[in-house]
Image (cartoon, rainbow, N blue to C red; front, side, top):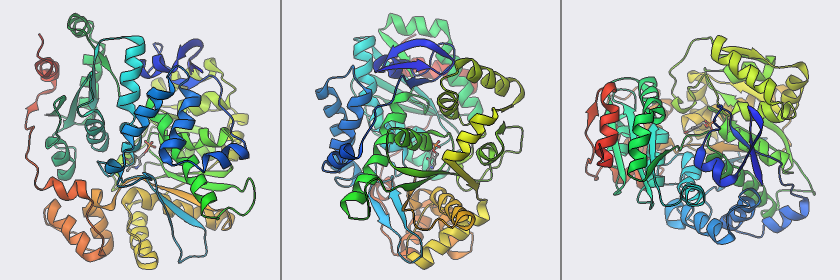
Length: 503
Ligand SMILES: *Cc1c(COP(=O)(O)O)cnc(C)c1O
């Protein structure tokens, strides 16, 4: 299978090239040239496999330049039972005390307790193998700018992966104390972490500058290294996410929940960069029986408006919410959807993306808008609604969810109110452990703001809710701080070169 660029269809690269390169030269994103199709018979065969087997089967359709052994090794290492607390890294929980038919797909049993582990545990293996095929013998240097979750998940994913080094920059005052601690205690011989005196945008701009600096590239080249990227537009991060939607459907088939052949499900996704829900769209296009894709946003509801009106407009207030991983106004992966829905019209996509860059806004054609509305339902939920949902789920279902998942549940309720579609089995992506956002979850349950430190709040949440603290968070308390460096924005390049021991 080959991959094309959303901004130039005549660009044709292999999977390894797409993953090693991350983004196409003219700024477009790589998309598969055509999608494999799964019949109901295929699903029947898939449901007999475990998660690792299902992942192998689906990946092999997309990574045709990888050997079966390479795919097997990557998947087995990524989803080892000791990393995800068992054989199924994406288990379903049925919520019973309601008249609906909803399942939470828990995607947060990995090493950092958020769904990004599902992709970032696998990406390093796919990336190192892609580099072997395209730039053999070189060490990949991964630079990450993070506002929290991605940095830690990338560190865990790349930790001690041969042929890679990773350096994460985060804004000194822009991440939660727990996230800071998660990163500063990171283990591994190829990892490094540095806070910067600036905000997330400064970190991001600084990383981009180093990335595109020809001098630095030459220096790396001399030492047999090259920069590579782990950010969410890399095809190697999207592909692992397609697997769990298929796997959820298989699990429902196995538990006897599906009453007839081809019965459809709804999928609800709390959305930021549009990566996770785009993976669900790909699953549907590949033949997974899906009725509606439900796109849930927080107060940064640029996607809700886009899906309802056809106009994407990022000229609006930016809100800092209690679901911070969804505080995004430019959802990069949307570009891939537009490419597919315009029938691979690279000119049109380029034009819209240019308008977005220049004016912050574009409007899609009526036929594209109609297709979007056929596929997607959209809604949003503010912080108050998020807190109420956490409390309601806990009181009625005895289920503790995090702030991002609560946004999804709230929007699903809006969908039911608007459509009365209670009968379609619905899978809601649960994207983080409630313990990752303990302060907000605790406040939602008790109605009071706690003034205590992060660890006391984690313990209080456990006591109040009678749920166990996940191992990775419990262990943090005992871990030693390895990284304390803080640098100015202008010193970021120096920090990179020091970490690599080159100059
Ligand atoms: C990243 C993230 C999201 C948003 O996912 P996208 O793929 O960017 O849409 C939602 N919830 C949590 C907890 C996240 O970390």
